[in-house]
Amino acid sequence: MNQAIENRIQALVSLTNGSYQDIKEVTSIEFSRTPFDKTKHNYFVFIENLKSNELNHMLNQFLLCKEAKQ
Image 1 (cartoon, helix red, strand yellow):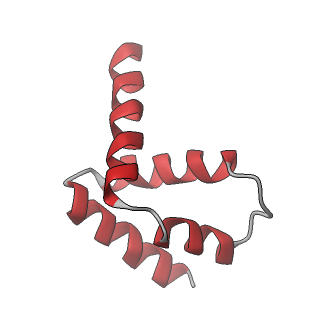
Image 2: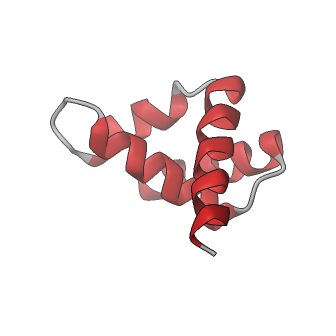
Image 3: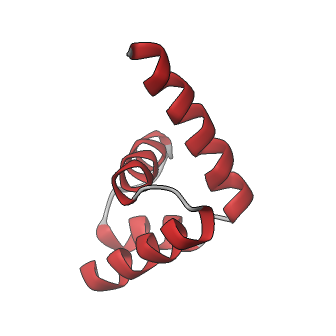
């Protein structure tokens, strides 16, 4: 399961031209805000179901917050 999650994150990286660390952090943040049992399986389903436009929106918000902190 861990390898499948890593593969999906890599696919999202290439899909959005984002950085691996940023995408992993964003998906982790969004996952923690989603109301369901936090298991690896649910995390995998969560990132598997992410559409590129949803992820791009989350990344943009994340990067804006990151820039504001600097």
